[in-house]
Image (cartoon, rainbow, N blue to C red; front, top):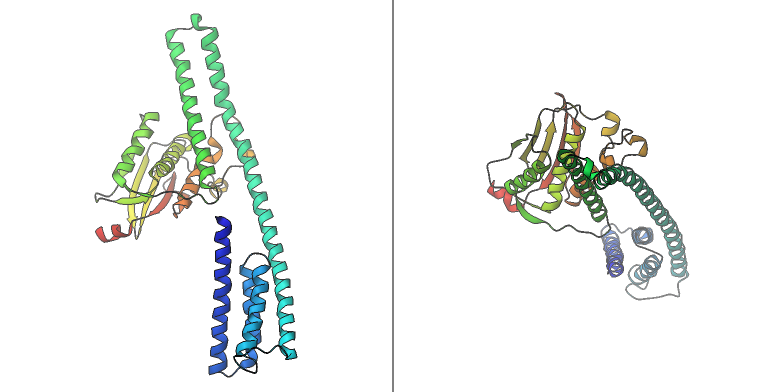
Length: 355
C-alpha cells in the first residue's frame, strides 16, 4: 500500500511541476516575448522533478516530456513536432545529462539520510534497552528477595512482616506494569505509519479518571484542580492522555523534593486546550531541563542509589503521545520555585463556537 501511495504522489508531483512550468513558459512567451528563457525554465522544472521524486525514472521521463513540450510549443514549426533541427536534439541531450546528474546526487543524499536515521534509531534502541535493563533490575531483585524470604522463612515471620513484604512485592509489580505500559506506548506511537484514533472526550470525566487512578497509588497526596465550569469536549485518545497526566504527576512525586503543593489546571488559549501540572518542589536542573523529553537519559544520568527513576522514559512517552496528537509539550522552572509541565491539545472546531 505504501509503495502505491509513493508511486501516486511521485506521478502527481511530476505532472504538476511540468504542467505548471509549461503554463509559465506560455505566459512568458506571450506577454514578455522572452522565448529565450523557455529552455532554462523547463530545465529548472526537470531539476525540481528530479529533486522531489524518488529514483531516476521520474526525472528521465520529465526530461523527455519537457523536450517534447519545447519541440511542440516553442520551436518552429509551432505546435508540431520536428526532430530534424539540431538544436532540439542537443537540448534533449543536455536535459537528459542534467537529469541523470541531479537524480544521482539526490539519490545519494537520500540514502545517506536514511542511513543516518537508521543509525540514530539503532542508537536509541540500544540506549533504551540499557535504560530499561537498569530500571527493571532493582524491582525484580526486590520481588525475588521478598518472595524468597516469605517462602523460606514463613514460619519465622510475623503476620505484619509478611504483609510488609507482600506490599513491597505488590508495589514493585505495579511499578513494573507501568514501566512496561510506557515502553509499549512509546514504541507504538513512534512506529512508522501508526495513527491514533481520537474520540470526543469530556474534560471533567478525563480529570476524574486521572485523579481516581493517581490516588490509588498516592492516597495521601492532595491535588489542587482548576478546570473551566463550561462543558468542554476534546478530541483525543483518552487512555494515552490519561497516561501523560499520570506520568507527569508521578514524576513530581518521585523527583520534586520538598514539594508541599501539587496543582493541575486546564484552560483555553485560543483554539487550544492547555493543561498545566505545577509543583513547588526543587525544580529541574538546567542541563537536564533542555533534554528532559528525550527518548532516554544517557547512562551517565543513571541513579547510583538503585532507586527506580524511570530514566526519563515516562516523560519521553508523554512527548511522543502529545506529538501524535499534534500538540506541544514543555517543561520550565517556576520563579516561585518548583516546575511546570505544560501541554496543549486542539479543541474541536464546534467547541470554539460554543464557548
